[in-house]
Image 1 (cartoon, rainbow, N blue to C red):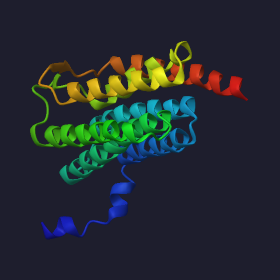
Image 2: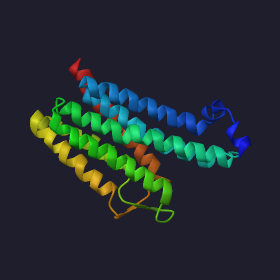
Image 3: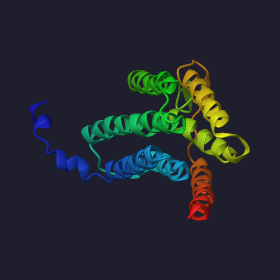
Length: 212
C-alpha cells in the first residue's frame, strides 16, 4: 500500500487513456466558456466532443496491454470526476445561461448537477446490472439528446425554448436516477457516435459561420 502512495502523479498523466480523458475535460471547459458567453452552438460542439473522448478513453484502456490495476483504478476515478464537469456542470451552465441567469433556473441547475453526482457515485459503487446493461439512463446520453433538441431552437422563441430545455434536462435527470434498465452501447456503436458528433459539429459549425 505504501508503494502505491509513492507513485508519481505524472505517471498517471502520461497514461494514454487519461490523456484522452483530459482532452474530454478540455472540450467541456471550452463548452462551459462558450455557454457563459451565450454562444450555444459552440457550447454544444464542446459537449459533443466531450462525449466522444469519454467513449474513447475506455476503448483505449481496454486495448492497451500492461496497464496495472492501480492505473485502471486511477483512470476510472479520473473519468468519473470529468463526467461531473462534462455531463453535470456544463449542461447546468447551458441551462442557466440560456435562461439569462434568471434565479428560477438555479434549482434546475442544482438538480442536474446533484443527479449527476448521485448517479456517478452509485455507478462507482455498484457498477452495471450486467456486462451490457446500466441501471438508469447514462449521463452522456443526456447531452446527445440536448444537442439534437438544439437543432430545433429556431422554431421557438427564446423564452419558450429555455422552458423546453429546462423540462427536458429535469426529466433526463429523473431517468438518470431511475431503475430503468438501459443498454450499454459499445462495439460498433462507437462508429455511429463518431458519425453523429462529426455531423452535428458540421451543422453547429455552419451556424457559427452564418452568425459571422
